[in-house]
Length: 448
Image (cartoon, rainbow, N blue to C red; front, side, top):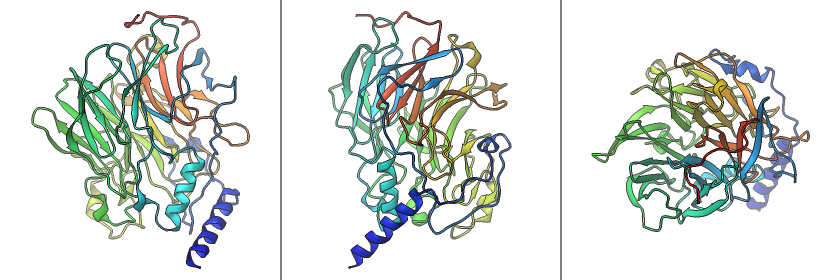
């Protein structure tokens, strides 16, 4: 009887919120971008806004729309939920085909069950392929003609980085290293665990990213929170919502920056050499809060989560409150829109598209809890003197159709050997390649 009651409430809640009867945003989405976003009064409700763009995939002959002067083509198709990219020095492209691991304690209760249905409808929460695929373009036509399984039997892998002849992979529960030989199309040796990462049956933000510093001496690992705003208890957040610094020589890790709800993309800004990250902020404060953001990552800095958002704006839902931590909270550098699910980050430092040099491409996976939808595109944020400057520019759009259905959802972004932009689309199961219209072929380092 109880199970039937819960099922009835769940079904009614999902139908109610899917039907679009929730109030719409009162602010234009542009107000939540830039260095001074509009932060209206928080709104609360028994159930959050759920406005899903159902995952449909790309119809034959349909592709995203690039900015003026650019073209787009599929670099690789038919992949299995490709979420993250890494370009090796020889031009090979690694793709993490991955999804969430089993996390039974994260789907308990009515909210948990609703969240699971939301993710499935949006094209996620299916069994993970748990592998990394290698793509190679041997003739320079912008299409991968070699496609091999590079690593398999992983555990919800995400971030990848190469230091010398060692490839590091961030599984959901551990940082693993593998020996790498240039030109290899498959690694068959077993990996070595070098650092355990927070995971377990409650593993709310499961993606872990990793990048190396330019000197190749330290790794930086992003770890998301275990909840929206610590509603499961602060004891469940130990080691979460932070970026770790891992010293390769000693094998020791320490918190580098904390209070980051869900950092994903990380990169080194070309002009200033500073570490930057993009962060997904909290939900359930209304359509017009809270903006996702990108920020420089200062050693020892605290960025507010869970006690405050966008600097020192107190979140009254968090129990117990902590005014001392709020007073320490650092304001982010640049807002990326409310609920845009900004994930990918790639700074541009090459010459093929000089109009983008020095700035950052951002992959926005798209909202599930905002009306109207936000994100679902790749944007570019210009930089001047090492800081974001001006308004963002659309680079790749058209991921939603006029019915509000998702043909695709952009996630990871990377720059290929020629200077073109690669975009992982985990709903379309495609890697898109964006380049100037004038570029037809290019020299590749790996011809066969």
